[in-house]
Amino acid sequence: MTDNDIHDGSSDRSVAPDGGTATDAARKHQNTNYLDEEVNLLNPSTAYMRDHLRIVWSGFIVWALIVFGPVTLTAIAPETMTSITVPPGFPLHYFTVALGGPTGALLLAFWYARKRDALDEKYGIDHSGVGTDTASDSGERGEAAATDGGVEQ
Image 1: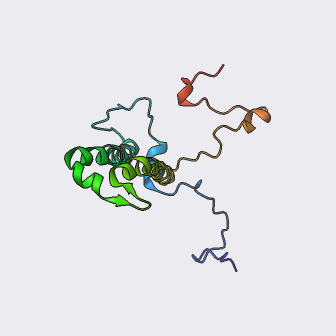
Image 2: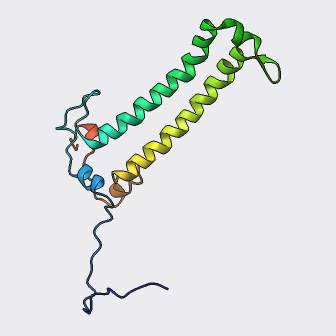
Image 3: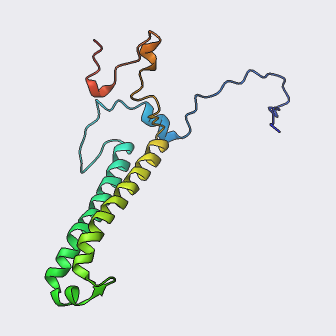
């Protein structure tokens, strides 16, 4: 059962939707001209850039630990890394490099995709219309994307 009463005592039912913008971050993101903003990896100028760089740097640190951690531990403590065996009998250094590295990279890619989707949802970025050519099929053309220089030919 849906609630169709507007609860203010009036009979005016001409309430219009707000366009679906959910958060303040999404509204602020939609009003930002990213072509005029400074791109600085150490001091991002917008909240979206700061949040995205936080995800990228976090992933980079985890990736560096996954890739260089086992090799560094083997160089520091070779006896420990080669004497410990992991079922089905592989030395620990081999197991962590051969299976841990690729598995970690796969999990890291999955983690990044999930975090990026959550970030896009937070800032109201919708990718459902990207890559489709439905507007040109109906004879209308949308605005040129910022990535192509904004020039419509």
